[in-house]
Length: 101
Image (cartoon, rainbow, N blue to C red; front, side, top):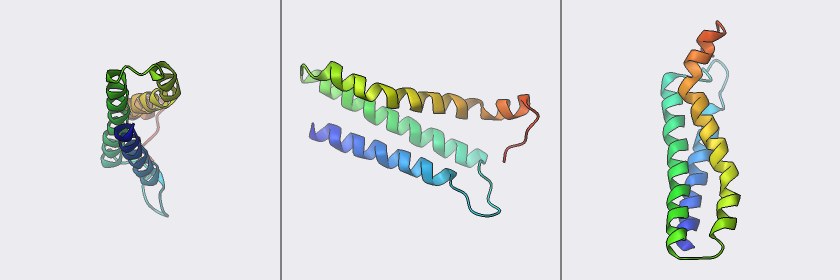
């Protein structure tokens, strides 16, 4: 459980960095290619941390694994959806005739 706590702390840190990155000041671009790349990296890292925790937890043979997986599932879905959007954001903007803000 200690390993999972550290992995989830790391995942939360990655997601905090992502949230901070999209907060912009006056005159600053909300999204750039570099920001999108950083967001993809940090969100992927957070997902990997969660998956590593689940894999390690499964090795313990704990009966609480299924319940734990259910609790993690929603955050995995949100991160996966976010990555899908980021991976296609330029084509989405192009499709609607928009430019990257």
